[in-house]
Image (cartoon, rainbow, N blue to C red; front, top):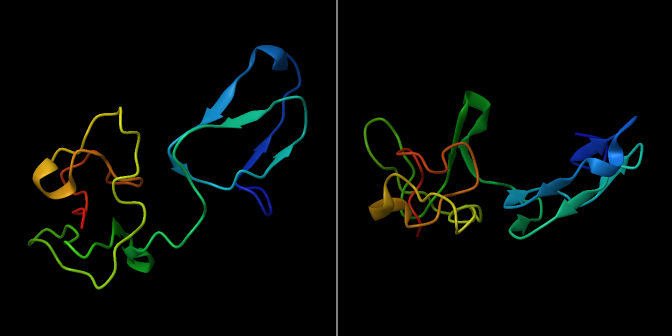
Length: 120
């Protein structure tokens, strides 16, 4: 990440033919442009927030959910739910566990994965 932004772009040649579009992501729309390359921000952009990971310090990047996040021994109910649940592209592939996670994947490491957190 660039200081104060999520992207830093540059282009030395062929920039006119390059296109960068970011959709369905949690990113800042501000970016550093060191050339003629432009980033277009499309649908589904979530402003940076605390994603509410279960335990990032120990490498657990599952999203917290009042309906339960995945553990190898079963779901654990959280007091809060991440705003990133069910925020992936609605036209994309749905989660592998639609009974828990619904028909729209989460943004994050476990989107469209059997370890996705449950949608409250």
